[in-house]
Length: 197
Length: 187
Image 1 (cartoon, rainbow over the protein chains, first blue to last red):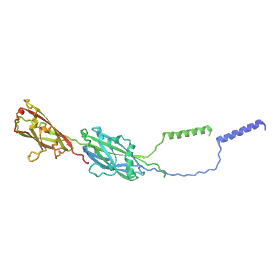
Image 2: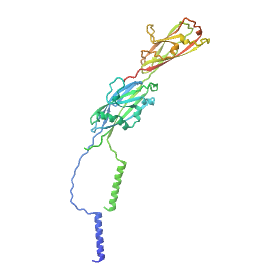
Image 3: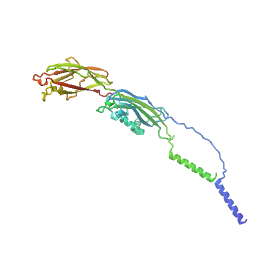
Image 4: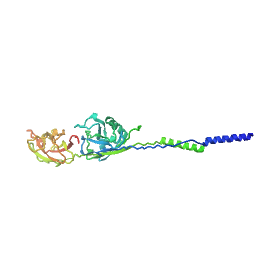
């Protein structure tokens, strides 16, 4: 063969080779098989009962009130985190919220006077509670609460005990006569960490 | 597939992946539940009627006079204590009293009962009362919506000595009653 022809053949062979690399021809045996599955998610359902935790009138400085309510897990997933955000509106002097203390308790307080220090999870004014971040509140209240009583498992309910006090600060508090505070708590339940199933 | 196409597809796949990593997809389950309540405070309201207890003329040593007036609780909360402050001024007609205080010669008695057998809640000279803030309610509680009569007896004490410096004098007395709440209670 002449040189030109050999060169030409070489080039075309290279070109063919390159195109084979680029494009690719595939020839193989194959077979397919199917597999399927179902994923169903669980439900996260938190409710509070009663929803009106407290309705108290004719308060004067020094009065205190114990109330309990239930947190109910009506879903299928365990609740391991509860965040609480607080809001309130005042009909009257705005500072009323600074004079009402709320104590979250481990157990129901059956004492006649407002005491029980080792029963207190967290103690603060409604005004401070309103200004706290919900997960800061969670750390102060629900983390120790769940540590003590276990988390809120699916189908379970747990009682939350609180004590409110209109604190008598030994000063003139007459500006708070005939004042009304409307408290709103929003509990947010979150799922637990993801796990292997 | 051409080389350019493959490269392009690879790049867009990488871009999509990077986008997902940076912006973040957060998906968790949550649920919220509301609960709330109301706190309403009561009122403490004390009124005295009539405002002027007495307007006495022509008194002399030895005279006693009893007047009554009504203390009313117009609020929603019980009144446990009524603190009384006394203020008085003496108008010395002849400017002859010098250091002598007319208040030393008037004794005032408060009681919630007009019968003599009942021991009064408060019995003091006017001059002594002026520096005190006694609770004239004593053991009593003035309940919300209720009223009670308080009896005030004045005596211009005859001390057996010359009290002529007080002739023609006038005394003006002003009482301030401060109603106080009961102790805090469990509700």
